[in-house]
Amino acid sequence: MSTRHIAVLAIATAILAPSTPCQKVPAELRGAQGQLDHRMENEVQGGAQACVDADSVPATELLLGVMERQRQLSRTHLSAAHYRDVTFPYVTKIKDIYAQRRVAIEMRKNRKYPFARQWAAEALGFYGRTDHGPALVKALGDKHLGVRRWAAWSLGKIGFAPAVNKLKSLTGHTDEFVRGNAIEALVRIDPQFAGTYQTAVRGDRDGGVRAALLRAAPEVLKTGAESLAITALKDKDWRPRMQAVDNLRSTKTKTSVDALITALNDARPVVGVRALTSLQKLTGQPIVQKDVWPKWWQDNRETFQFPESSDGKTKAKRRQATVAFEGIPLDSDHVAFVLDKSYWMKKRVESSGKSETRDAAALEELRGVVKKLTGTDVEFSIWIYDEEVERLGKKSVKLTKKTAARALKFAAADASGREKNAWQVLEEVVMDPKIDTIYYISSGEADAGLYVHGNRLGRHIADLNRFYKKTIHSIAYSQKGFFRHVKPISDLTGGTFRGIE
Image (cartoon, rainbow, N blue to C red; front, side, top):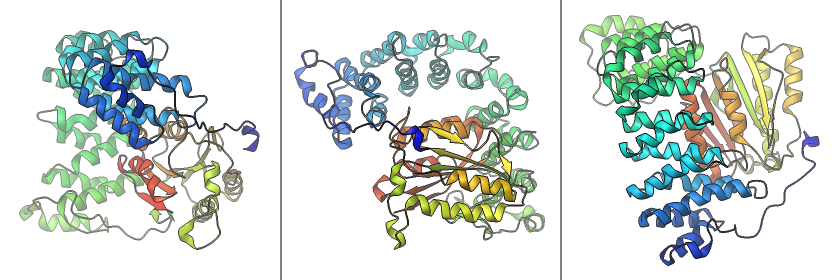
């Protein structure tokens, strides 16, 4: 990997350039501007909150200016996107209608930076006002695919009825995100589209779209969500089956328990494991042997009463795993490992009491996994990343002695990258439809990429995951203060987080 690191960027030491010329900023916002231009996150948050409190067009322009400024500085400031990510949630809190319209103008008129238009389209959905519907309808024709995806999503969030005809024209769109968001938006706007929606859940040509639409069923359908999930357990694609299990875990009916017991034997092991934990949560029973469930249910079904608040309070139990990475069990037969190769991985693991580096600790865990999986039917893949991304081969492989040796050699690449682009590698791995489980190893907050801060990185991975249903286990070899940038990724995808200082 060292050949990719010829140029090492110097970290900027000067305070960031103002996002808007001082003479254009009202006096009462000068303090907020100074905070937004600061390098400390808490200062930026303070400035962003001051803009929200002011709730005006000039204040909103300061927030939007941070988005534009990061485009200009992204090549010279290693943490540029960090400030954008910190600021964006405050854009979604603007209340004044004229300030919100300024965001709509950004969506229509920022021709230089399509992602600024995309984020504006996303923000408009949070406002919940149909006033922004006409602008979002126009955005459905934007040249940038991301703008179209989020415009469709936001139209559903605000329930803009005049968008129906345009959204109907997108229900056959070639892009699965545009198509899925448009179909979901239609039923959110008008329940009469429930038939169209259910037909797509059962028969869309893409399993990811079927899964994403099924996810919304309990919220958007007045009736039929449970039967839709039970039917989806027979889907040929594992992703709708996984989503069906997730839907049924919160459906307190005996027919849901019937269906989940059937799902214990799903062809994808991860679906069966999710069904097991769902049964435990739903019924309050700590049974770990899947072959015991049918007999227990047969004996208790007639008189069974669901616990008052079992979901979220009953701790899921399971048999001890034979294969695990840093204590996180491996249940998958289609697994990927994503290894951080930035120079931060050369730091010592303080809690180990040894002199080993973070990179060495991760490799030691991986060797143990590879050894136990060699000769099994598990399909295995490795990605390594710093500012760039590399994959071992073009597809997953089964581990033989030969492929295992090649995998470990690839994983042992030198950790010398200056930056790490978590978004790029996670987007790539998540969008591989065959993989169902990811072990994401990181030294903490990302330094580069479209999203770097834990809040935005987690949210957008979760949005992708509506279509891909990956379970992402995240392992942070880092200082505790940086765990927050990694933990949301597992929290939002049904995975487990491990923090190792």
